[in-house]
Length: 571
Image (cartoon, rainbow, N blue to C red; front, side, top):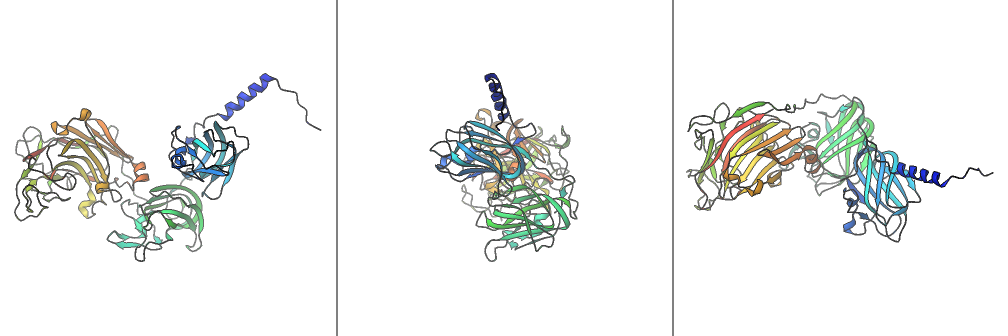
């Protein structure tokens, strides 16, 4: 017998329709965030190169993904880590789906359907769902038009899964084993232990002896059984496209707790769940022609037999406090304060043409400035690249370089100097910092270099601020260029260069205006490890010639002077 109900009035139906519409259009919950924007997206097909899957997750409502004209088709996004997914928002183009599923996966291969629609009307759809995974897919099974499927926006909302209570780093200074290890001039002693030492400037790499091959693997012994909830991989460019994370109790029988066929390289923070004493990265396909290499392989969880990791350095106070300064308020002709500075004599690097003297080219002017003077002055018995002005290979110029290496260094802080730079082809003034471990034998660029200010005398309307590390250095350093308001010339007056440096990044300023910022997380996700959490010392110098500025010419003025009003450090 059919179930009889009273007919609804038109007004009641309208109210019900409005209520349903409001429920469908509810925004993401306050605790949820947009997880998909800017993440890696792939699709079963694209109509052409203009309408690729990345256009559906770029946050731009004017770009779109569009598929080939056929059923089924799909688009999926890699959230980068496991997440609790609560809502999916779809902004359809005219080519929409009448039937589709929203699916979630932990590995990009095995899918769970969390929403099924069989009467889609296109337009803007908000779907409240419930599921946990790293990958979210829209699988279209029936098109509404003769065209394909097309989305202006594919937005996934939710929250990333957090570690278990009491979870901590379990892998620090634990022993590791790998399929092979590299030991040559390109990667000296790149043993498994390097991946577990919390030193972002040392790495493990597979060997080149028989060519780089698949598979390649590395595992860590946690010392006892542990419950694993997070793994952090900081890849060298020699990274894995396809790999598994595996756990074992005996280092022989392995269980996969995570797998991917689309590893992005650089830094991956992976929420996982598994139990074992041993944790392995098992690479089966490389992203490059080279092998597998990890700067860091960090395992987090509970249990194990962890070693206590070193305490991170403290960030500067807010506001920071002055801890070191030199205002150069000494009589004319005085040398740099020996309690604060030491001379750094010798022939310069980078194919420079000058000899740095033992403070012969540095003195105060009696007006509150330190003067570093570059001179056309031959130094017999020395060898430099050929000077294009004189045609000689004997070093034709002298200048000065000083540093605080054995006197003062700092980790983080506000580092500032007021400087007037010279103008002329081949001149290269700089205010910069080197990792203090350089003085105890760690070679550049593994110690790290922070260039606060560099100016090229041939183009003194442009400034440079740059970071150098093993994964990005020299011409490939991570930096920015900038100018003064109105295109003013840096050489016309004093200017103040400031660096604000803490555990999350660096902000560079000129005359109080921000000119370039470095976000640690973005750097690690796009270029390589951040290696700037240890002491650095200060350097001032004026170079002549070299790879970066080019050589001087007959019009370059000598003597040329770099003036420093003060240097101050706050923490």
